[in-house]
Every structure is written in structure tokens, then in C-alpha cells.
Length: 279
Image (cartoon, rainbow, N blue to C red):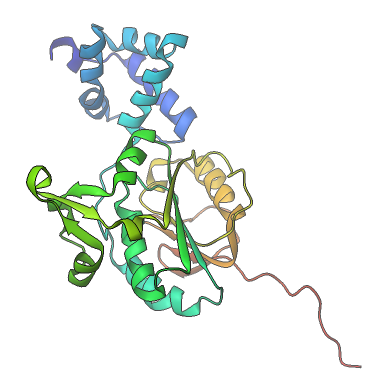
């Protein structure tokens, strides 16, 4: 790899600043190995001998596509099916039984390669049936969304899927797809994958019953967390639920949410439009 393993303080801070401004994600000062480990092949591909030259290119009009690639590489995180299973149990045992609407809408707000969205879909299909639910799954990375839309994964990533879900909602690959798993189309048809930056509010007025935003807030500073949560709350219906990762909290933020249990929050029900008074 040669010089691609070395990054100057100047280039490192330029890259960190760009990722923070664009995606709100903080790359720690000790993460030089992460940055070089994910980007060195890009330097090699374009023939740059330094990260300064690479960042100069991605900052130019000609580097627009590479800017997106760099952001994809630096913001994509590993995930797997039914990660932190207590949240899926809570969805099944607590939230869904309280659902009083004809259709449940869930927003998976940091879907990465789609394992979380498909895990949610399995729970909803198992408890609500085939028609009365849908999922919006978003991520800042267009590349991971392309993968998510296929619904195809390496078989070693299925260890956490309950056996009955695996039987009902997944198919094992054969031939050239040996060692792969595919989520069935009938399940995937309920999920809409869209590219979205959490620093921006959604442009439509869709309201969701549950929003999953797990294992992302840990990469934000408090100012960014506040902005992201405010954007999410605009799309969370009164009485709706916000679910974070187990190691995350909203401590220190102004949200108006009620803590149901660590990492699970609820938006207060809307006040009655009017009160009845006894005559």
C-alpha cells in the first residue's frame, strides 16, 4: 500500500470536517487507521500518492461522484439480522398490541444494507399479516441501499433469525447463489428504500407509528443529535415510539419524549381538541 497507509494531520482533519458537515458523523481523532483502511484503495485506483491530492480531487467539480463514494465508505456500519433482539420483542409484545390504527407505518431511519428493515418486516408480517403495514427504510448511502433492495445476504449473517421466520420469509440460494440467503419478495414489497440525510427534515408529511434509529446517535455530537431528533419527531405521530440503540440515550436533549425504558421513548398523545363541560 505504500504511502496510502500514511495520512497527514491536515488531510485527516479535512476529511473529518467534510464527513461531519455533510452527515453529522464525528470521526474520532484516533481513527486515522479507519480512514486510511477504508480509503487507501481509492487512492490506488486514481493514482494519488497522498490524501491531500485525493481530497483536493473529491472537492473539485470532477470529484462529485467520488465524494459520494468516500462518504459511503466512511459512514457505512456493520449490521446483522435481529441485532439487539429485545427491541424486536418489544415491537411484537408491547407496541403492536397497542396499535389502534388500520395500518402500521414504521421508519427504519438508518437502514444500512437492510438487515434491520427486513427484521422489522418479519415481525410485522408474523403479527399483523400481509396487508396492514409498511416500512420506509432510509440511509445516507446510496450504495448500501442498492444492496438492501436486493434482499440477498451471505448465509453466515442469518444466525440471529428465529427459525420460523427463516422458514417463512427466507430462501437459501442454490447453484451460483450457494451460501446466500434471499428475503422473499412478498416481504420486500412492503419496504420502500430511499436515500435520506438525517440532518434534513423529510419533505413529505408522512407520519410514522414507530421510528428505529439505532446505533447511529453515538457518532453525533449533542448539537447534531438535537437537530436529528427534531427532524424525526416531525414525522412521529402523537403516541408514536422512538427506538435507539442500547448504548444510546437522549440525555441532555430537549425532546418532550417520555422514557419507556432505556433506549425506548414515546411521544405524548395529542391533547384533546376540546373539553366537554358538564352543563
